[in-house]
Structures are given as structure tokens and as C-alpha cells.
Image (tube, rainbow, N blue to C red; front, top):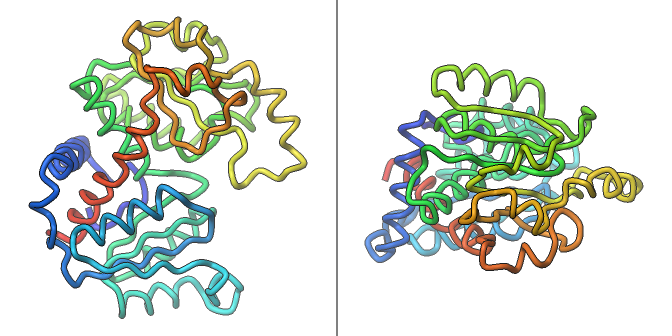
Length: 309
């Protein structure tokens, strides 16, 4: 693993190794106290962040490294004054590793192609690999395994979380049901589905896209949803989207279709009363804050792996 741009940069074995290492770091954090001494991480944010920024910053500080947080309002690149290729070459002269959170996936690819240091995708409109790797750690903790599981995802499915989740399930041989409106606007990217289905032929993962809520949730081990109003959505579309997606809200009825010991997951931020009810989000079956906490340990594992420590 030279970069982490997509879940597809990893093989099944590498995903399991990252989960195992993150779990070990969580159990014995003192062993990793100075593992990244004098290493410098640049984090570049063209989009807002809470969990991604804090988890990477704290991960570096806890392992003895340094962080430079760089936001788009300060960057000539974001204002069209410098090419992303040139920025990448310059950053490679100063830092040891870089994490970028931006909308355009193709721009991130350009950066990585010109970089001499490891590049991490902190979120693009296409994928969110760090989030899903952290989620796999949470699922492993709660279920004790990462095989013979069924995940059901509800709501807007044309987003980074859904895409990375589909890829991860395909690689690991997990079953995933994606429940969303039939229109293209809310459905997973066709190329993502095509790639995942190709992988699933070898791993025996079952991937289904449906608008049948009961069928999607039936016997699921994990119920997952995400916000309906992501950063890319203009305010003029909020009302329309909420009306269309309301049918796919995760409530107690949806949870009751799943297995009795099914857990509820959400990458946050969450809006109670939209994609999920307060009764589910704040219930004992919800593991959303354990999810958020595990971002720290997975970011540590990712940094250590890319920096070969």
C-alpha cells in the first residue's frame, strides 16, 4: 500500500491486517507512543471536517509526530493560482505524508500521481476509505468476526460512504443490501457496482440494490445509514430530497426486520428525524460513538502502514 485513495488499493489480507493492528493499538497505545517521532503529516481541507481532522491530528500527536493543518482558504491551489500537480511536488519536498479532504476525486488522483510521499483520501465525492476501514474495526469488535455477515445500507446511496462500503464488502466476501430510491440520483455509481460485482464473483459476496425495505433489512447483522444532505447538495434541493428519502428512514420498524442482535451504524454527523429516528440513534443497539472513537485507532494503523513503521 503506497497510497490510500480507494478501498480497492487494498487486498482482503491488507484490510484484515489494518483492522488487527488498529485493535492492537487500541489495546496497547503506549507501545506506539513515539513510533512517528519527527514525521510530519500535512492535512489539507477543502471541505468541513470534525472526526477526520481531529482523529488524524490526535493520531499523529499521540505517536510523537507533527501535523500541519492547511485549509483551502489559504491555498493558491484552491483559488486557481497554482496547479494541483505543482502543489503535490512542493508538498513532497517538505512533508512525509499527506491527507486530503476534497470533493473532486479526479483532482485527488492527480495529486497522488505527482506525489513522492504517501497520500491518504480523507474524503472525496466518490469514496471515504478511512471511514469504512474504521467501521470494519467497529463491526469486528461488536460481532467478533468479519465473515458470514450481512450489512444493510439505507437512504441516499450515491455517496462516498456507500461506495467504499460496497467495495469493502465485495473484497471481504460480506453480503450487502443497498436500499434506496430507484432514481439514478440516489443509486450507487454504476462503475462502483460493476467493479464490486466483478470482485464478488471470486469472494462470493452477495450485492443487492433494492427499494424494498423489509427485504433489505431482513436478517441483517448491521443496519447503516448516512446523512441525506451531504456537503455537495445545494440548499435548494433539501426539501425535495427529504421528501423522496423519507421512506428510507431507519426507525424501529427497520431495526426489527433485522436480527435481534443487529447493530445500528452511522458515520455522523446525523440529523435525528431525517435519515434516522432519535429512538434508534440513541438506543442501545446504536454504536455510532464507538464508530467515531475508532477513527483514531484506524488512522494510527493507516499512518503506520504507509510510513512503514
